[in-house]
Length: 317
Length: 275
Image (cartoon, rainbow over all chains, first blue to last red; front, side):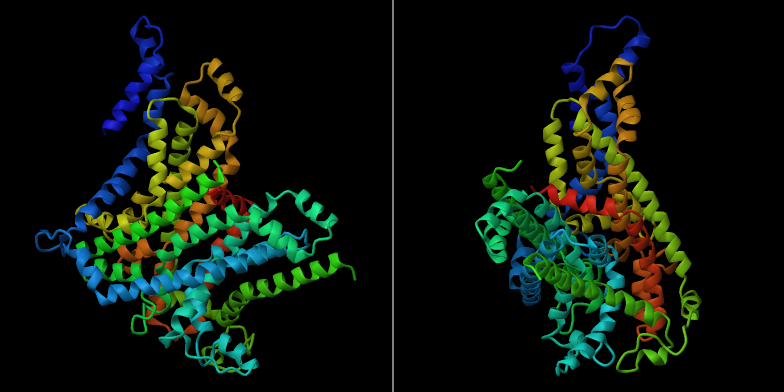
């Protein structure tokens, strides 16, 4: 609230007009000041930001030091939620599951989408068709995608095992196997996000000047030389950005897991947000769940810091 | 065959196999939604059943208030899209064009909120909603989505590109800062607004976590949540489930195909923010 008052006041100080004679022109003057309008136009955003972001961020930090089930009185427990989390075997399992999920889905997704973007950048026909095709999963809801892929992974009449049988492989019972459920979830995730990353890469590729490739052609470079010595290095800011965003997104994965496997079998696909969701909205361990949210926040924060640091190094913006 | 052609053919081969992988699951969904239940379990799978069973689509609403889900989703999405276009363009204009003290600090703070994972604010927001008796109402989905740091950022970036001379001309003609916003900036920013609009539409229409947390009764569910609950209860009636899936995807695919360029611009812009 203080901020708002300073805002409207500061406008008056900075751009104070000559004292206006009469009341009407004083009001009229006020409505020609930037400060007045800055305050009025920002008001909805400020209210929304305070109510649903800033206050909740502070509140959940506070909650993470309490024990509260929303029924009995809140109890201050200090750091014990965090201590308990570090000793909670389930949390350690879902933490490593999250790392497993991110560690495979991010690099694999980036490599595949980069190759597709390079292929699409070859001044090729049917570009619009390809772009649309790869974007279909991106615009579809995760619920729809999960329904379809559960069917695809069905061991008896699913498409995946049918195709695998062509090359003589008897596919596993994907979603009920502790070994194969996570790879199945990862595969679906990569499939869904491919088009999005591909488009960002495409934008990055279009920012690389043709003159580099022309010079390379004159020097008689092969395509893989051009790819490794021109495309990859010049695209690295984009690649880095996609990597960071993908990691942040995959640390927060929930829908995919919740819809396809409910975290099972035997928690083999349960991830941090899934465990957080269960604690908060199934068992109402609000303090414990808040501590988990802050550990997640910390993970995202570290990744974002790395992003800022690299940006400075590259001297962009 | 020269090298150029060979490269292009390779590119087509890669892209086409990828595109098939992308489209096939959707085709299979449509084909399954038109089959008889017994035909679903035939192995090896067939593309079409003996006859096309359109009535699977009619059977959805026998069992589930599908139209209600659809209308709920539509209502929430339209309200959120309109609200975010208004609030984000207002805030974007302020941060791009109006001069006041602490502007950069405030903008930096606002941008920083994009970094906060939704899970951090989710629990306090749930408590707020419960205290105001808004659990299981559409307000719990609409209120937190009325403003957006991402939308503000996106439109600010666009407003920065509008030449200052237009603004000055309007001011000389006696426009207030609001007049400049409403008569100059809003009309000029239709493409940017459309980009933000399709993005918000997609995000809101597909949102699953918030409805899952806040909505309990069937009559108030959105399409994704309704579809998920339907799957929970009728996981074996694949044709009907697939018919529901098809209906839930159609609006987004339609909007995407109509506004493809805006989608692509939005992705590109959101990608550029990191550079």
